[in-house]
Length: 120
View (cartoon, rainbow, N blue to C red):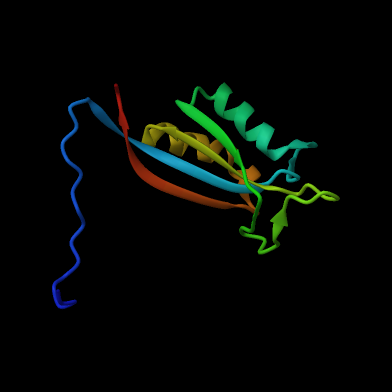
């Protein structure tokens, strides 16, 4: 096997289930981050629910860093755990939601991916 051949992206096999395009937004924060005197994580989930987003989940990590470059970690004496707030919906709904919450996301890292929702 040689490395001369160009790398090709493998295509996913066709699904027997209907799919629809969507966007996944991952917001990397600390559990201690605040927004308007409330937890930023709680505020993001509350606003996503109120906006009718298709789904949102919060994953708490053990250690990590984001836009601030400050390492956040879970420790016996200080629980400053990193967290990922992941939300999914159609592109136009995500765009509108991100515009609505832009002031909350000034100092955090936001990742946006195109995904497919599979209806089982």
